[in-house]
Length: 329
Image 1 (cartoon, rainbow, N blue to C red):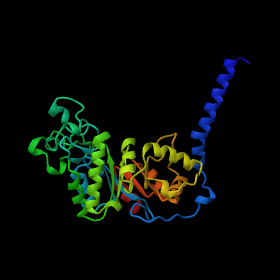
Image 2: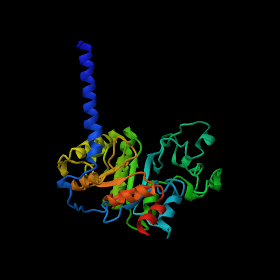
Image 3: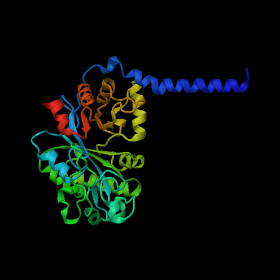
Image 4: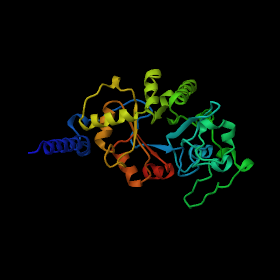
C-alpha cells in the first residue's frame, strides 16, 4: 500500500475516533444514568430549586416588554398574573463609567441610535449615560399582536420606564419587592470588563445580595479575572470551562467540588445538535458536584416542561408569563 494512502487512512481513523469520543459518546451517555448518579443530591442555597424549576425572566422578560428596560422589570415585579424567581439581564459600562443594563454590544438593534447619531455600530462605551438616556430602547419591540407600540417615540415622549436604566436603580427597584435571584452577564471585555466586574461585585456586596446573584460572562478573560481576583463570587461556568465540564460529564469523571471555580451552569439545553446537555444525567452530575443548572433561552412549552421534569433549577425564558401558567397553574 502506498505510504500516502496509509497516512490518509490513519488520519481518517483518527478523525472517526475523535467523532465517536467527543460527539457520539456524549450524546449516547445522556440516555442512561450511572449507578452513582441515581440517588437524590440535595444542595443548599437560593439558586437551587426545590421541586419545579424556577422561572428566570430573560432580559427581564423580552417577550412581554422591551428587553432590559424598567418597564419589563416593573411587569415582572408587579403583575398578579405570574411570578418569577430570577431576573436575568446584561451589563455594559458607559463612556463616563456608569453601569447600565443593555444586552447588545451596540445600540443599533434596540434603539434609534443610528437615526440619532447618523452611523451604525455605536457602543455603550462611545456615549455617556446621559446621551444613552436620550434613546428609545423600545424602538424595535414587537408585541404578541405584531404591533410596535413604542416605535417613533422621541425626546420627552419617551417615558422613564422605557429608558436604559442604571444597574443600581434596578437593584433598588427589585430589592424593594422581595428577595429575587439575579443572573448578571458582564458583556464588556478587557480593562472595561474588569472594571465592570469590580464595580458590580462591590455593589453586590454593599447591597448584601451576593448569595442570590450569579455573575456570568462569555469573555474568557473576564472569567479568568473573576477566578483570580474575586474567587468567592458566585459565578456561572465560563466558555472553556463549559466544554471541559461537558466531557467530564460524558465520561462521569469524579471532580472535587473545591476545585470548581463556578457555582452554576447556564447553558442551552439541546438547541445545539452536537452538544446536548439537556438531560437528566447532566442535571444529576451537576447536582452531585454542588452546581446549579440553568437552561437558556427556552420558550417552547414542551421543552419547558421536560427540563423542569428532569430537575433543572431554573429555566430562563422570554415568556415568563407563559412558563408560569405551564408549571405553576
